[in-house]
Amino acid sequence: MKRKAICIVLFLMLCFGLAVPVFASEIKVIVNGAELSFDQPPIIEDGRTLVPLRIIFEALGAEVDWEQTTQTITATKDDITITLRIGSDILVKSGEEIKLDVPPKIISNRTLVPARAVAESFGAEVVWDQTAMTVKIDTSSSGIDNQIKNLNQDEFLIIPINVISETVSFFPVMVDNILMEILVVEASDGTIRTSYNTCENCHKSGKGYYEQEGDEVICQQCKMRFKIDSIGLQSGGCQPIPIFDEDKTVTNDAIQISYEVLSDNTHWFLNWKPLLND
Image (tube, rainbow, N blue to C red; front, side, top):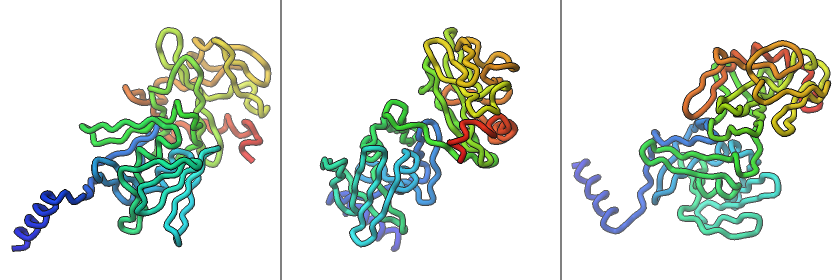
């Protein structure tokens, strides 16, 4: 009898076109190659994926504020501010009103917001992979800086392959309360080179890090120059300290470097860019 009643309710919903949110624990959200973890699973409603607000905003590097009285969400990143309100189909981006297909809502005491709308508001690219039930968000071309990830034991720093080019990319990560930075670039032969953005000779100076100039990187302490094609091949002296193949995992989608590997190399960064570690 109970099953029959449920079938009748579902039939009526379909007949009258009522919106039924789909709770799908298998829905994944990936930002810059890193899968996000939620205590409240994302849902799909009217073809739109809604996700817990705080985690998605923090992954995008935005500061978020919740105003209980008006049930209003305000998120800010650099010069962009967006505002949403529970039940309202209007998103306000720096004064401009944008109509939403699905409004934010509260489920199990968690506020859920439409993933595509908020990510695109901050300039990110969003792709929905129907087969994998995955929302893929890429901030690499959006002007959103790489966020400093606080890496814990048994976790991995994940660097998406699709953001790597002949222009050097720097990926900051906090390990054991030490700020580190990984240098990644595509060499002229198409191989991907990885190193720590410091060197054995100059790492204690506070300026032992590299910046790119053309097809070279320059140590900001001793001003020595190194060809990008030489990065990651050998260790010793004043050159970026390489991260060799045995210390990373490379797949078609990402480079993964474990907490354990990074933790073993924090000593190179104890006085690195000291103002950033204060």
